[in-house]
Image (cartoon, rainbow, N blue to C red; front, side, top):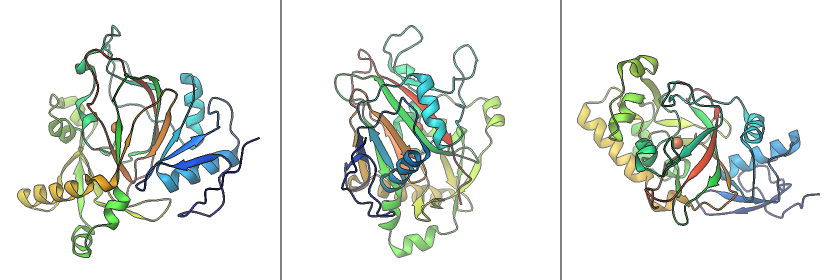
Length: 297
Ligand SMILES: [Fe+2]
């Protein structure tokens, strides 16, 4: 029997949640206690989790222990699982539950094992025509200190824009691409094959959240330029918007605890990994699943 906690859903329906949930910050994020995600959940529980997800954008389920199969099963409650675009060193595709880690193929901590793009603000797969809806990370091994994940709330950031800026970016689209993502993060350039496989896509800078109707700023490290603007104007506009989004009042920094299972909404957040741990000597390993979203509008 789960406790009905007193927290009221202020942005949603007002129905109390059937689990213990505690908001983490003003900018988003809530901790959920007392649920075991490794076992089956029914539709009513799935719907309550989704409601909390829409209200808080980031849910942190404490004290979880899921196998990869259990994580895949839990994830499938929220949509279709996405395959990773990358390839393993032997050329084979990533498994559906893949690993985010600083460990190399021999299990040794090494800074080079982490994709550089993770350290820059981004929203997952925005270089796809149909980007990611939800990403879930389950902590398996954590460094003794640091290794945080940061989120910035692009819904709040949009709300805080001046009316002039809102009018200026209404109707503007940005081009997102794998190639730009590699370039922006200083990673080795995309290969010709990768460029063919992942051609650039255009998404509105002002995105409407498909479930809440709220407007968000949809940008990040996969962006190449604003379509239709001269290059210098495009660069200046992206820099101004990103500087706005990166302000501390929009940011939640997640400090991982053993057993954390975190899900977040890529449609109204940017995220990045913090380089704040002993990456060359300490181990960090998380299991990741991603749910496919819908075309931004
Ligand atoms: Fe990511």
